[in-house]
Length: 389
Picture (cartoon, helix red, strand yellow):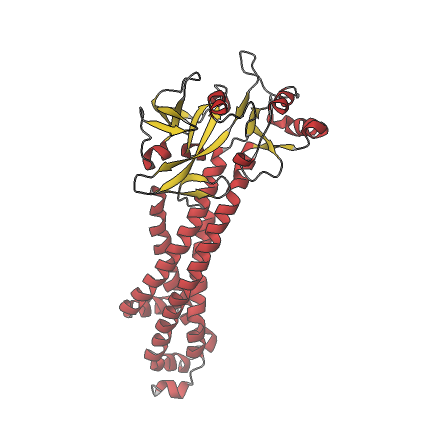
């Protein structure tokens, strides 16, 4: 015979205090676990959104980031001659040479951090239509002017419209604030390419070259032509979205490993709490267990009932932990991206994979905490149990 599920629910309700304490412990652990996964996924989502699947980036091979890549002027001109590079309606090639530099700014709450300054041409707005001015205006390409991503504007001192920032021996005026669908561009300053090259005495050498193909299906043909030219051997083309996805791997991986390590440590406490709760349940119900056995319920049924009770506690705790963690989606934080050595603002993000992983983790704690007490309950001697021993 099988013990009905309502028996488990009844016993769960009869021990409210110990059950609530155990559920709370598991909920807190699952909250931390889910938050770590959400943070890592948020980094990935932000950087993947930074790139477009229709754009191609050219950068120097083996460069760890844009600031370590250099594409000289002759190489830029050579790339412009390759087939399948798209043109704008007015006949200009859809190519944006972009120098990338790092400057230091003061955080509003104290401290300093690195910020990316990207030089762009007017062509960039056709390559990245997600970038939109939400306050002020675009920079004048003839002047030392900048537009600032809204994430930087919120966090750093002196980044409002009309403020001036000093770097490269000159004062740069902020004239606009832009957004970019929550992508990494919102953690950057943008200015004119030629102004930035002039300020840093870089001649015509930029960090990367971003271009659009006439049809993204021609990427393999473009790459084949690119790789076949020996003058381009030190460089490589990458789909922009793929490049930024790769940039997220190290930071996201580190967050996951650190988060899981901390969670595993915390989970020992939650698992022990579940185990104590279930051992107490067995000790308080020895006569009841003996009665069930004398009525013909098998050891396997007793084990299943107690293990199910432990899983019920774990699943409730897991659901509460995930529910609480889901509210983190309304918050944004920032950290230093170790690939770019610059500030990156991102939001916690939740997806079905994280929810499933968190539920499985909670159930795993339930199994670890409930298995040994369940085995003990199933092995109680009928006569001893009826005597309460």
